[in-house]
Image 1 (cartoon, helix red, strand yellow):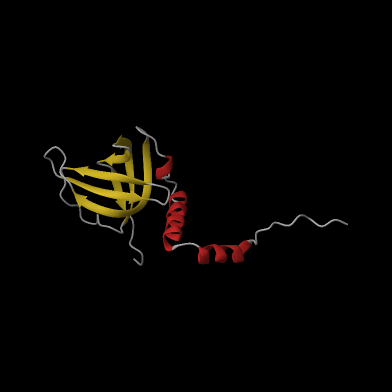
Image 2 (image 1 turned 180 degrees about the vertical axis):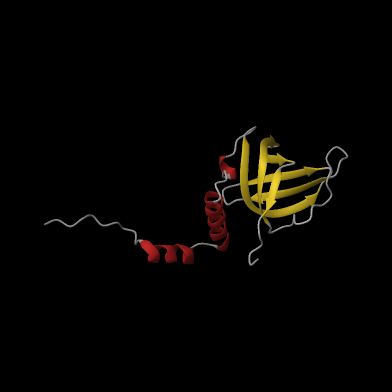
Amino acid sequence: MTAAPRSDKPGGRFRRMLDRLSSSQEDLESRELREDAESTGCTRIGDCHDRQIVTVTGTLRTVTLRPRAGVPALEAELFDGSAALDVVWLGRRSIVGIEPGRKLIASGRISMSRGRRVLFNPKYELRPLGRE
C-alpha cells in the first residue's frame, strides 16, 4: 500500500493565515485590489495595451492639478494591485469625489505617454467608500 504524494505546502485556511502574517500591508492591499478587479469583471491595468478600449477599477493614489498646453488638467493615479495608470480629465480643475483613497471604475481608450498608461477623459463611476 503506497501513500499518496504529499504537498510540501500546508493547505486551506492555515496556509492563507500564514501568507497574511508573512505579507506586508502593501502586498495585502494589492492582492485585495486585484481580486476586486476580477470580481467586477474589469481588465487588470497590468494587462492593458496601447489603444485598447478598457474598463478598469482601482484606488486613486494621488490627485493633482497639472496644466497641459495651457489648459487645466486634473490628473489622478489609479492603482489596481497589478499596475498603475494615469487618469486625466482635461479642462477640469476639480471633480467632486475625485480624491486620494477613493475607489472608482473608469472606461475609455488607453494611450501611452512617456512610458505610462494614460486614460483621457474617461467615463467613470465612483465606488462607495469603505463603510457606506
